[in-house]
Image (cartoon, one colour):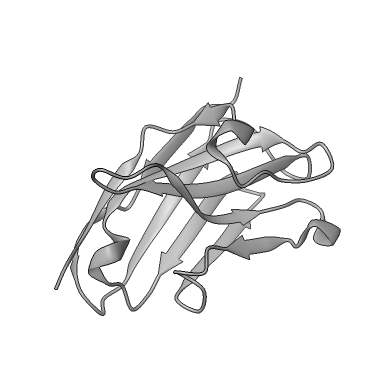
Length: 127
């Protein structure tokens, strides 16, 4: 079973940038979906970005709220998923989780579509 560990969270002022990383315990190259979710206080966990191993599945997908500001990428050599967050605002605050699931023709955007999760890393954006 793959294990995930997030890092890179912290505090930043509005307009600033952070980079989150998610290290997988084993290779998740071309057979797994990987995604970032976030959960803000009092809200449900929501997808931020996902990356599919199949280009026909859209390859990278973003929530409307982060399009143009966040970039998700994956380094298969190091089994690391990265989320670059730029021009952040207070609504970006929350606990960020990475998740992975075996690819079965599409990558889910719902929490229930992923069985493997990291423990999360906190991001706080102050205005």
